[in-house]
Length: 231
Ligand code: UTP
Image (cartoon, rainbow, N blue to C red):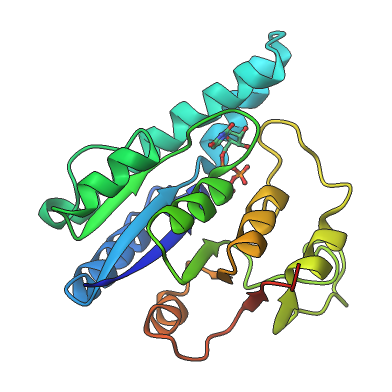
């Protein structure tokens, strides 16, 4: 049986800020190259569009879980874009839940999901999908090249972890916002899931498709490895 690889693809790497589609095409090509060897389960995030819509709805007085639902709708929209980019190797529908994703995985090399329920992000969906398909690694392809001791966008002296265990990472994530559309490098819920099921997490900059390729192949890559702590 093919090994399953679950990947959380940040919305910001799927939907270009400059209107150029090179990156989504490159990622689609990369997955097409390796989908004979691995079964890919992709969970696509909402990115800037989700944050924009969540912002509008918040201003209009929407409650947090309704804002989450709006975010989920955008993740599905982005997932449809990913299905389009991949073409016939991808299951033609966005899997609405884990059971459907697994079912589609029996017939397709690449299965795509968006968000599911309010209260978490697509990182958590990816981690749970990884539990369900017995995946050994979970790749979080985002717009930061790993996990830093402080926000690298604000602190130039921030240093990247080559490796961090889930316990340390959870300490770092204390105090991050639980509101809709938070844009945190890793959702704490996803970290707890990696820990409980002893799944290794790989965090990298998904815009760098060479590094993404290395992570898929189990080679050393530029980014951070999340090691499940003993419970
Ligand atoms: P994302 O997973 O994209 O969250 O979902 P993010 O970390 O803010 O953004 P990226 O990583 O840069 O793409 C967007 C929003 O949709 C809601 C949440 O409000 C989330 O912030 N959402 C998503 C859910 O409520 N449940 C889900 O399963 C997924």
